[in-house]
Amino acid sequence: KMIDEIQLKFKDKIFILIAICGLILAFYFRVFNANDFKERELGQGSFSKIKAEREITDETSMSLEIGRSALQVEVAMSEEKKIAGLGNREFLMNDEGMLFIFPQKGRLAFEMRSMNFALDFIFINKDEVVEIIENVPSDFEGSIAGTKEYDKVLEVNAGWSRQNEVTVGSAIKWKIK
Image (cartoon, rainbow, N blue to C red; front, side, top):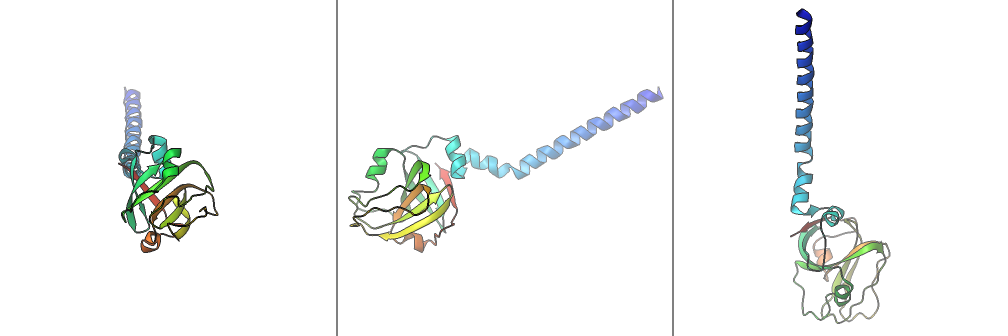
């Protein structure tokens, strides 16, 4: 009878130990991964996370934080939209931009075709600014390309980059609406 009591106590100790380990693991995942789960639910965080979880198209509504400001961006994924870009528009609001997304990184060239206002070009690789070309006039006839490889280009009004303290190395946070 005493051996049965000792075995029962040992089984109780094992059960309590397993229960405590389970509680510790649950607490760890709740505290340390709560923000990650929340970001995934809201469709925000790093661009690669978002792209893996959602289809991004020309119709995708996206906002981003860069420098000390937030922007609403129009996405250009299709070749037609990339070619048209911001051409033939009269103006661009100061809190807006166009984000060109490419399937792989490289050094693709842009033109100021049919533009009515000057632009800053912000070249992005993954979630970081790698280069900025500022104040390209609307009548510029050459091509614009970064010297480093990039997989996204953000076009904003001329002067916006400097005004919002966007620099090489600035991190970008994305949110799909």
